[in-house]
Structure formats: C-alpha cells, structure tokens
Image (tube, rainbow, N blue to C red; front, top):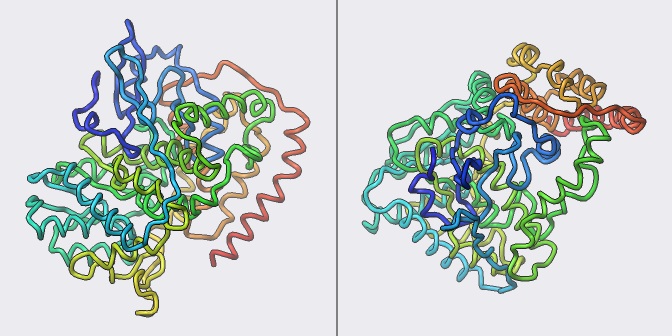
Length: 495
C-alpha cells in the first residue's frame, strides 16, 4: 500500500491510526497497517532487530516513540502529516489549562462535542459498528448515537460488537444496551482457542504487544455488517483523566527507576540502550507549544506512547480493512478537556452525561462493580462474572503445551540480549500462579511466545552478542525471591 487510506487523511487528532511506513528510493514512503507488507521489502539478510524495542515492551508493554521491532520500519509520527516536500509536519499539541468549569456545564459541553464528532465521522448513511462493553465510555457513545437517531441526524444502521465470556458483566450488559436500543448485536466468545489464534495474529502488527490485547479484533475486522467502527477506548483517559486506573494528576515518570524489573535483559544491554530508550520516550517534548506542569507532561506522554502504541496497535488490526475512529479525540474535545483543571476531570462529569442519555441507558449496571454508576446505592451487586476473559488461566493451563512448543529459548538466546538464568526461572515459576486474570509474568510469557514466532517466521537477526556480568548474577539472586513473592501475594489478593 503506497498511500494512506482516504479515511486516515481526514483525521488530525490524538486518536488517529498510525500505519507502518518505510523510506524507499527518492524520498518515497510506503505505508501499511500490516507489518509483513513492509518486511517483504527488506532482504532477509538486512532484517535487523531493534533491541531497544524489546526492552520497551518488557518494561511497559509497548514500544516508545515511532520505532518498531525492525530497523528501517517505523510508525507514522504522532500528530504529524506528510507535507508537499515529503517531510513530516507536526500539528500543535493541544494545550492544558486550569479552568474550573462547573460540572454540569462541562458535561453538556463534552456531550455536545461528542455528538458533533460522531456525526463528522459517520455521516448520515453508513452502517456503523460500535465496540461495546459493559463499561462507561462505549456506553456514552451508544447513548449519543441513539440520541442522533431519535433526532434524525443519523438514519443509518447500528451494529453492536461485543466479546467476552458468556456469563460476564461485559457481555450481559452490552446485550442489554443493544436490546434497549433495538440494535443488531454480535457477540464473539473469548476462549483459550481464540487467545491461541491471537498469538499468531499478533505477528500482523509486528509482535509489538502481547496477544492478550487483541480480543476479537480480527473477527470485527472481517465482519461485513459494518462500514466503519467507532470505539471509546480513549474515553476513560480523555474523559475522566484515568490512565490504567491512575488519575493523570498522579502519573509517574515511567523512565525513572528500573526499566528491567523482571531482570530478563542483560545489564550490558540495558546500559547500552537506556539513553536511546529515553530519547524515544521524550522525543516529542520539543514539539510542545506551551509550558506544561509535570503531571500534564505525563498525560501527553501517555497519549503518545500508551494510547497510541498499545491500544492503537491493537485497534489497527481492524484498520487493515475498515475505518476505525476513536471517540473523545477530536481537536475540539481534547482542547476543551485538557483546558479543564485537574479537579474537574473526574467521575462526576460522566455521571452527568450518563443521566442525560436516552431511555435510561445510564442506569444499567457498570461492569466493573455490578452496580449503577450514577446511583451507587440503587441496587445490590450482581453475581455475574466480573472479568470478560480468563487469559491468565488459559495461558498457564489450556495453552501450556502450545507455549512449551513455540516459545523457542534457543532462538531467544541466540539474539544475545537475554539473561538466560532469569528467563528460565520465570518460565518455571510462571505456571504456579492461580488467578484467572493475567499478571505481568503471563503478559511477558505470552509476548515472548509471539516474539519467538515473529523471529522465526521473518528470520530477524541481531548483529551483537552481549556477555553476562556480575550485575546479572546479583540481579538473579535479588530478583528471583521478589518475583516469587509478587506471584504469591497476587494469588492471595485476587482470590
């Protein structure tokens, strides 16, 4: 694919999709959402591993900056467009502010901006698919679309896409919302088999993230019932200021502290690569147009890296065949929300929006708690399964023999960057966890399995070989009991 799909060029926002690209002759670039498309343009002998990306993934779960696992292949830069000279032209990053807006007024404004954002994306005659869970963000999107239908501003079809275990809150409440609005509903069960398929599917996006994040993306991509997809994945972060459950005012600098907490990478490699990793992480600060406070910088970094390189990468599987738009990300919405004081960005805005949505959708229980989000004392907690999957248990039990076969230690050690003793220890410790949900060791093992398949399929090389040093030995002695203690404690807490 030599040019961007037309739907990408209409976006200039924090939630845009970011294809792979590589430079060819005479400044020409080629683009694709499928890593394999670009790898085919690199001779096998020239396919070199980007070592810093391996460290990024094991540290944070995704790659920092614009690089990929392969040197010479990059992601399109954040908030940038290619100009007439074939150079990247960066769009100004929205400014943060300290406006202490009244909650009611802020909720009305945000809902109005969402309404317009949705109409701008879907037009009036498209078949729209919504990624709907039992959470809040996708529910708000559903309610706003329904309002547009009732006002005759949107007259097209709506199909709800939902995935998860049959008796989970996410599935039950999403189905209830679809039934309430009389929309077509399509559910994709999550199982050990679907997770196994996603280990292979992760190679399509360059093995950049753990397969546990891919859910039913391939099935949504391949369904012909919808023309475009709307997602609310960024909603918690842009709407309520939450990043992986932490309010943006409390975000920490990810580059401070140990970036090799599992001790899987040799110390010599960490010392060599750390400055490159830090440069990738901070590279966009030179484009900031205003002075931001530390917690505001942390939020920008989360958008550049976490939202774009983890959530965006998972969603880019859908983008391989059809447009997918992230709501809460238009320039008008981000500029307004980021202009609010940190004290205003909280649950109260969501409660106000949910109360205003048609046909009582806001009163349907919230999947995380089993209770109404807008009236927390209104009903007793339900007895449905809280999670939407059992990825941890499936990896350790159902897929253990598959992982034993496909996680190629010999191939990983050939790269020369792994602390072999620690990797073997963690692999032996891994099956002893007893939780249904994934822990950080599950995440690492599932990614390393996909990474092994990626290295083998595309014959990726590493030109260096690193030696173990005394720090690696000390790390093994210190880290092993800490990692075991972490797993024991997590088993008890999750029970």
